[in-house]
Image (cartoon, rainbow, N blue to C red; front, side):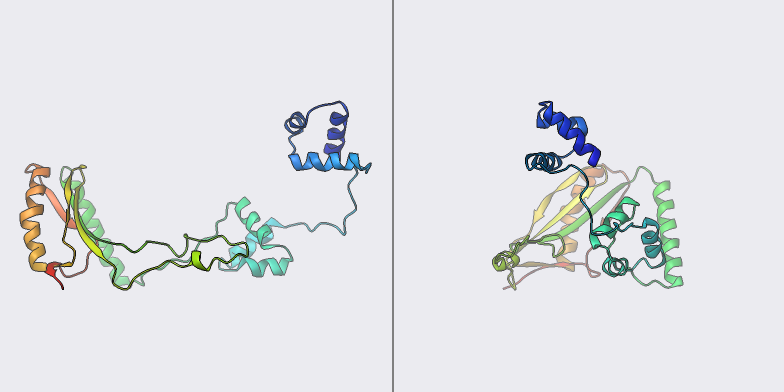
Length: 246
């Protein structure tokens, strides 16, 4: 940096503009201002004395530490190496590492793994042998007036001010809601959304009637007498019914 400062000084005395100097030497404006301030104060452009020898970061040591214990906390490693947590984070990113969150995973027995593999193989073979078959998906969704927020991603930035009102999201115990049934096919066709009156709850008998009188005619129109598979997406084990409440 001492050489850079001398070059900036020479160009300044030659009458070059600030933007030209920054582009020519590839330096930031802050570096330019510091050099100009030193020249105005008649200070030397040499490196100033430091309190001690800068600590050398051994990147391989950090990588080896997390290789031995991937769940090691950055704060603990930073305290041991007497460096900042941000330095540890920068080294990890520069070496292609990532800081990942824990995720839940079902504990499967050997019999369950074998059964899932067998079913998946059978499903793939079935799909290959019926390549022209259309897949029909249905999904029931309940919309409420309560706001939707994510505790992890929806955040409030605070600089010491009172943010008590911004941190809270108002919800109600029994919010007003409405249910919708949607059907979409793998060929891009879809059934117009079917909305239920407020206060209705789906149960098996009426839901079966809806499938026969509303969904099935639409499916036949979409598939045009071709082979198809109807799949209900992510719903409780018992088929829903339609029931008036209140």
